[in-house]
Length: 77
Ligand SMILES: [Zn+2]
Image 1 (tube, helix red, strand yellow):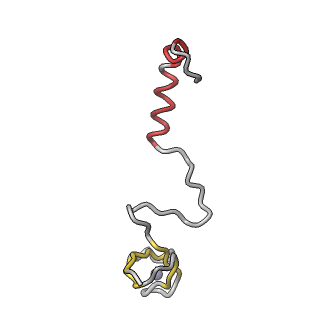
Image 2: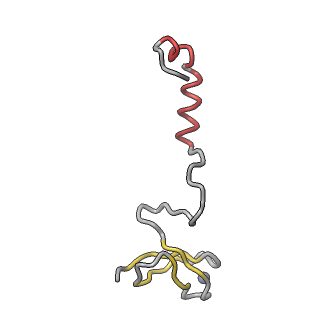
Image 3: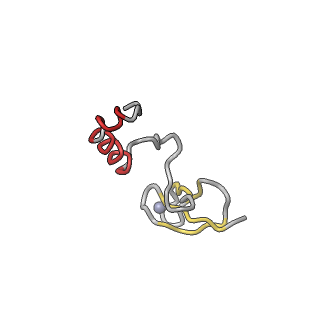
């Protein structure tokens, strides 16, 4: 067993549980608590994680701005 951080889906309380499961029971309200993945980033099962990030937006805008230049270099835009 390992100590993991879980966040409750109902009351948002963050708590530690000695469990390797992705889901556990909230100590506060007995609702479902989901494991918080290492790195502080977590997604609910089935959640689309491919939505654009700020970095992607910047890259797209940057590429658009340099469209003529990229075309000269033969890079598809
Ligand atoms: Zn709770």
